[in-house]
Length: 118
Length: 116
Image 1 (cartoon, each protein chain N blue to C red):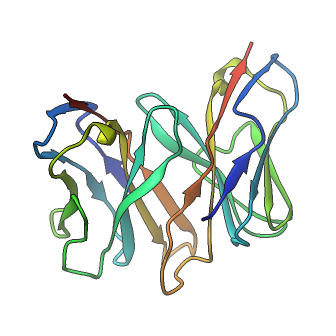
Image 2 (image 1 turned 90 degrees about the horizontal axis):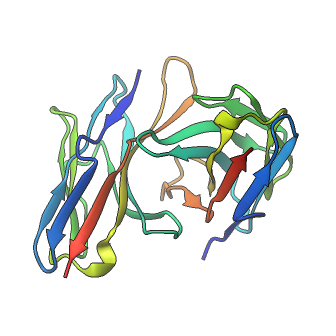
């Protein structure tokens, strides 16, 4: 069964510094997608960045980048030049289509609460 | 911008009541989802639907049912609410999977449901 593990329940970082959130996953599927979502306090969940498993190049979106290690099944998120507005819960998510059962799978991690300190 | 609207932000119901949570999306998305979010457990998929009148069980369907009579609307039903169903419920939508852009899910604001 697929699993997504976020081992850091809470983290903090000073404004303007860099922080890395870790995520590991387990799957036997060869074709899948990975996402990082951000949920600010009392606000809507939004996509931060995504990575297709078949792409070797790590995705980047402005100050956000991922370190995708397919063999190690690791998908960490790096936030550079942290800003106060980055304070949020961050969820790692996995999506695949099972070639055996024909069903879709959507798995979210338990989240990492990030606090950016002024 | 995609808009996913959940009918209530906060809801308080009593044990044994039948509870309806409504979700509407305005982007003609084929797929719609219901999750519950609990501290320390992340998001867990309850049900999803890939077409009108079609539904698939997620990881925790027990005690819930869903209805999708129209493409834009996906309802979550608690047949007989229990206190362990107190949670934050999130609705999401996405276009058909595996299209060229593979857009991720778009989420509503959530409904915080309390069962007394």
